Length: 182
Image (cartoon, rainbow, N blue to C red):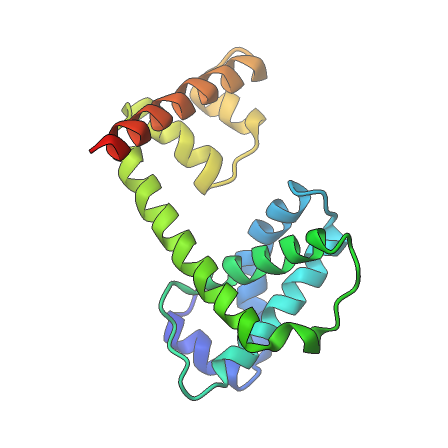
């Protein structure tokens, strides 16, 4: 993958290479999110395209500065678009309606929230057992299917892998609660 600055320059010029790279690197995550939130791959493709339109429009603004990684920014836009679509009960929204000032404020807040969330989660991950940290990383950061996790971690069944996931999530929850008391 090209560095963020090269991708941004290519996107401003509407380079097919840049769009291809972004699709190759981020569509799977968007598809995973949409599928897990009552959508289809077709919906994810639409959301990805709308995300690219929003991203390019934003990049063309003179005062725009990318304050997060391109992945965080793309995922925040995609999540916002999909959740907005769900909220409006699948009512088709004109893309032009999405580009008002409020829309961009919501995207910025979503990015800041996501950055804060990931920073906190990464901190919590350092406070749990190494085994749980590896398991959580495989499940949530690498989006590995449960069957692959079962095999790689040596669990006898998917049920055992799910139980271990639950125990690890509980470790994170306890660390979070302890940190919030401080």
